[in-house]
Image 1 (cartoon, rainbow, N blue to C red):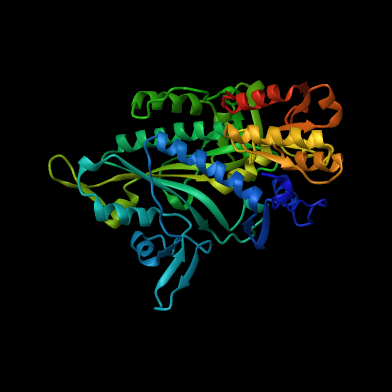
Image 2: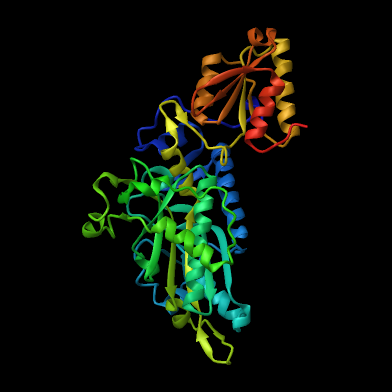
Length: 447
């Protein structure tokens, strides 16, 4: 993409309403614009990152054997009345009436709707196990929406639902989700710690939420520092292997890690003093096992091997897709702007032309641009007729992980400058070597 043809409305001043880093930087980098309290338009740069995050979530869900679908944003209140949650959910639910005077709601979650779909089409244990998921906009009418996309009223969320014949099978689905989430977050450059949590209005006895450590986190967390040394890495996981998934769960949940809601001073005291840590955390996902809570209330049964009708065991699993974008910025930024991990960056690298209009510099930038496009990488080429300082400031603000700087002086020596946004380190390389190095980082071949 050529910056002269792109819509990137960056701001020089920090808007007064932005209280935390991610909100400030998303507004300044031209990623979002507030439409009303807690509701945002996603501008092109923000939308690109949002879609990259969504794609990683999709890929890891499918890798784990889960099946994508799509449910509507508006739901009939009848389903929620059937489950008993319509009145219990609280004022966060946006309740409306259509022109036929039917009670409707803007879905905050989808347990009732997915249960209705299941009971309409599945009747035998032979069709189990089954896990369905979708990525859809949700609405919760927060009393005080704040912090940009971190605590908005409208948000993009992946919510998945498993249906199993027995509790044992459902707990394997729970473990499978925990493992898939660990891989998902690491691909985004995040370390998300699974912590024992409170189930809230979803219900159920087993639940973990995933928190990213950040100074601006809403929750106070208590944890054993050993947990921050754990990495999922490139493990080859067989998601159908019960023992393997259970082993990963135990590895990542055996050390103490809890939010203030479930914190136990006596248990925390058992952690060696030199490993006891307190911090702030941002919730980016949660998994639940709630047994037959919804299936019994809504008649979601299957025939078992002996022909008996039994309620299925269920769980739900959410990832805050739009919230993740803010969490990544909170965890990865400096005084100059955002620092995107390679897995979610809106553009793979930036190209800065120090002397726009210079025949040799223009030609070199065009060659770099076309070479990256040819191997399936998309650069952002700053071809504006602006001073160098302004171009560098824009690149630092929007946070592309790699920048290639092209100028007449370097070209006389046959080199360009390749700079890492994260470390600030630069090296001079011939253009083809700079291309090869960036391509290698993204797993692309240049020949």
